[in-house]
Image (cartoon, rainbow, N blue to C red; front, side):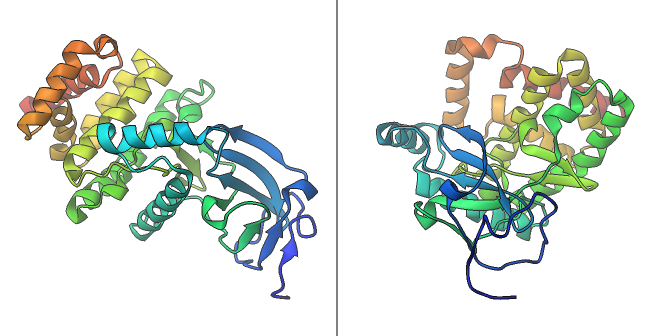
Amino acid sequence: MTNEPTSAAQSAAPSSAPAGDRTPVVIDLDAIEKTHLAGEGNFLWKLPLRGGWAVLKVYFGSRSPFLYWKKTIGNVFVTGRSSHMPRARCATEMESIDRWERAGFRCFPRYPEVTVKGHPRDGYMVFGYIPGKHFRDYFRDQAIPVDERMATWRRWLPEWCRRHRTAVDTNDNYLIHENGDVKHVMLWEGGFLYFDFEMVYTSKRVRMLVGREILAYMRSCGRFFGEALYARMMDELVAHYPDKALLHAAWEAAYADPNRFMRFIRLLDRTIKPSNKKRWSKYHVARDLKKRLDAASLTR
């Protein structure tokens, strides 16, 4: 096997790519057939690579530089998140994946030895293509018996808890998913796979970030799956998430933050923002969770 770079067009055919092949490849997007998957904040292409498929993620999207700066200012000074600038999002995603993988959580494989003509090297990454099934699609698939779906949910909850516990114990905010919801977990080869780490919450109050993420996931369950399945998943959460103290962090994030200033901000948020009156606001979901936790404590 030669170590000289080859073109993607020369080395591509759609099948399973060899996992251990790290031969340098130079991709010319104009010279290969590719499928455009998305394009706004990022551009995504599915393309052939080494006898299989890969996904090219370009962090420079179609948004104007002004909008990137506007979002960055909002992130840094309002919502407490990392920069929205393309190179910064690329760097944050790479650092996040490194940390998640070191902690034992599966992410999309990366091919940093693959370069793309016409794009700055710190503004894109080539990932392996994984044809798994998103949680969002799996749990609302009526062809799958609900008991089977709940068994999968129960199997995932300890892994979710382990990540939260690791994040708190190591004070690592990168282990909290900034965009955490059921759209960003996939079922793959008997386990779970995670993706989309372009930004992080920069706070080191990691326990509160755990609470925020729990609420975000459960809110997405309600929005995507409806009231009945949400109630079942919430019951299973309380019964099978191993660390009940961390579940209480979700209530605290919404109503009982130890920081008095943050409690005041939450009070204003609940009072002023109309969307927080809706069914799937974080405050409604926090009350649902607290009610179940209180009931469970009375039965023990």
